[in-house]
Length: 104
Image (tube, rainbow, N blue to C red; front, top):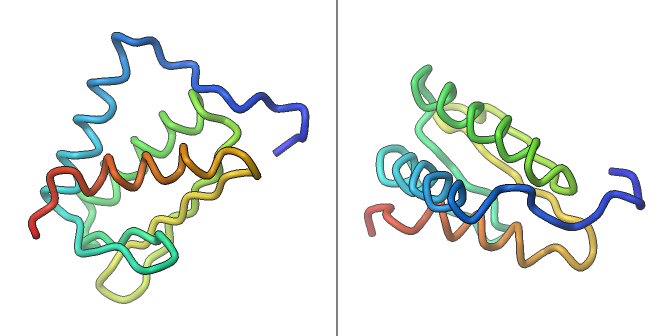
Protein backbone atom coordinates (compact mmCIF):
# COMPACT_ATOMS: atom_id res chain seq x y z
CA UNK A 1 0.00 0.00 0.00
CA UNK A 2 1.17 3.48 -0.82
CA UNK A 3 1.44 5.76 2.23
CA UNK A 4 -0.70 8.27 0.28
CA UNK A 5 -3.60 5.82 0.11
CA UNK A 6 -6.43 7.24 2.21
CA UNK A 7 -7.90 5.12 4.99
CA UNK A 8 -11.48 5.28 3.82
CA UNK A 9 -14.07 2.86 2.52
CA UNK A 10 -15.79 3.76 -0.73
CA UNK A 11 -18.95 1.71 -0.08
CA UNK A 12 -22.11 3.75 0.22
CA UNK A 13 -24.39 3.55 3.24
CA UNK A 14 -26.81 1.57 1.07
CA UNK A 15 -24.15 -0.97 -0.04
CA UNK A 16 -22.59 -1.64 3.37
CA UNK A 17 -25.41 -3.73 4.95
CA UNK A 18 -25.42 -6.14 1.99
CA UNK A 19 -21.64 -6.58 2.16
CA UNK A 20 -21.74 -7.23 5.91
CA UNK A 21 -24.60 -9.70 5.43
CA UNK A 22 -22.55 -11.50 2.75
CA UNK A 23 -19.65 -11.86 5.21
CA UNK A 24 -21.94 -13.02 8.02
CA UNK A 25 -23.53 -15.58 5.71
CA UNK A 26 -20.16 -17.02 4.71
CA UNK A 27 -19.12 -17.09 8.35
CA UNK A 28 -22.31 -18.92 9.33
CA UNK A 29 -21.83 -21.46 6.55
CA UNK A 30 -18.08 -22.13 6.64
CA UNK A 31 -16.17 -20.39 9.45
CA UNK A 32 -14.30 -22.81 11.69
CA UNK A 33 -12.70 -20.28 13.98
CA UNK A 34 -10.45 -17.28 14.49
CA UNK A 35 -6.99 -17.57 16.02
CA UNK A 36 -5.49 -15.12 18.52
CA UNK A 37 -3.85 -13.18 15.67
CA UNK A 38 -7.18 -12.60 13.94
CA UNK A 39 -6.63 -15.18 11.18
CA UNK A 40 -10.00 -16.54 10.08
CA UNK A 41 -10.20 -20.25 9.29
CA UNK A 42 -12.84 -21.49 6.84
CA UNK A 43 -13.80 -24.89 5.48
CA UNK A 44 -11.60 -25.60 2.46
CA UNK A 45 -13.84 -26.43 -0.48
CA UNK A 46 -14.43 -24.91 -3.92
CA UNK A 47 -17.67 -23.13 -3.02
CA UNK A 48 -16.21 -21.54 0.10
CA UNK A 49 -13.07 -20.46 -1.77
CA UNK A 50 -15.16 -18.87 -4.53
CA UNK A 51 -17.31 -16.94 -2.05
CA UNK A 52 -14.29 -15.86 -0.01
CA UNK A 53 -12.38 -14.73 -3.11
CA UNK A 54 -15.41 -12.72 -4.29
CA UNK A 55 -15.64 -10.94 -0.95
CA UNK A 56 -11.89 -10.26 -0.91
CA UNK A 57 -12.04 -8.85 -4.47
CA UNK A 58 -14.91 -6.57 -3.52
CA UNK A 59 -13.26 -5.44 -0.28
CA UNK A 60 -9.98 -4.81 -2.07
CA UNK A 61 -11.80 -2.35 -4.32
CA UNK A 62 -13.65 -0.40 -1.65
CA UNK A 63 -10.97 -0.57 1.06
CA UNK A 64 -7.76 -0.58 -0.94
CA UNK A 65 -5.77 0.36 2.16
CA UNK A 66 -6.30 -3.17 3.50
CA UNK A 67 -4.42 -6.27 2.42
CA UNK A 68 -5.95 -9.72 2.13
CA UNK A 69 -4.21 -13.08 1.98
CA UNK A 70 -6.06 -16.36 1.42
CA UNK A 71 -4.06 -19.56 1.87
CA UNK A 72 -4.96 -23.20 1.98
CA UNK A 73 -3.69 -24.96 5.08
CA UNK A 74 -4.77 -28.59 4.93
CA UNK A 75 -8.54 -28.80 5.17
CA UNK A 76 -8.80 -25.11 6.03
CA UNK A 77 -8.70 -21.83 4.13
CA UNK A 78 -7.03 -19.09 6.12
CA UNK A 79 -7.82 -15.42 5.60
CA UNK A 80 -5.43 -12.81 6.94
CA UNK A 81 -6.52 -9.18 6.82
CA UNK A 82 -3.75 -6.62 7.11
CA UNK A 83 -4.21 -2.96 7.95
CA UNK A 84 -1.83 -0.02 8.12
CA UNK A 85 -1.27 1.80 11.38
CA UNK A 86 -4.44 3.63 12.34
CA UNK A 87 -6.74 1.30 10.39
CA UNK A 88 -6.59 -1.79 12.61
CA UNK A 89 -10.15 -1.16 13.76
CA UNK A 90 -11.38 -1.60 10.17
CA UNK A 91 -9.71 -5.02 9.93
CA UNK A 92 -11.21 -5.93 13.31
CA UNK A 93 -14.65 -4.87 12.06
CA UNK A 94 -14.31 -7.24 9.10
CA UNK A 95 -13.37 -10.12 11.41
CA UNK A 96 -16.47 -9.32 13.48
CA UNK A 97 -18.59 -9.28 10.32
CA UNK A 98 -17.47 -12.79 9.40
CA UNK A 99 -18.07 -14.05 12.94
CA UNK A 100 -21.42 -12.29 13.51
CA UNK A 101 -23.56 -15.28 12.56
CA UNK A 102 -21.00 -18.06 12.98
CA UNK A 103 -22.07 -21.02 15.12
CA UNK A 104 -20.69 -20.92 18.64
